[in-house]
Length: 145
Image 1 (cartoon, rainbow, N blue to C red):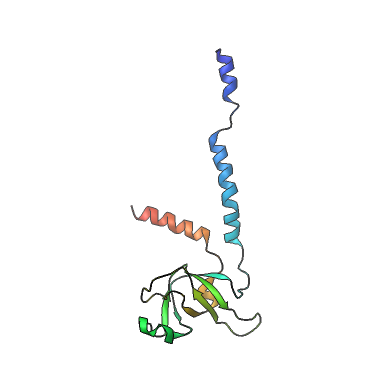
Image 2 (image 1 turned 45 degrees about the vertical axis):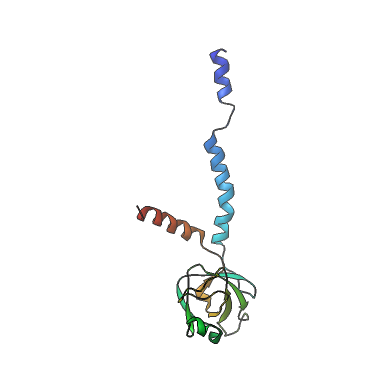
């Protein structure tokens, strides 16, 4: 094989880094746009996520007294919940009744599985923050070393 034929064959394939960059842009763009989109009104049946560790009242505290709960529990950050009753738009009511999801064991003082809670709109968000999660993950990665 002559050197001229060998050189002309090398430029025919695209570099792998450009394919990887294009794939990353295609995969990350929808996630980034979704995380930057504003929250809409909270409606019955919506899934919401806790914005942090909040002490919230139980909607029916008598159901959880035997498990050691008085009238409140601690909501974990990023806990998923399903909205059972949202305030009507334009009303003065602020309380949202939501049910804890994604848990199957009782860990006092954290909210028990399937507990109905009275939460405020500032306790929840409709979508987890991708940018904050990435920042927290990178911070944990470098601080644990």
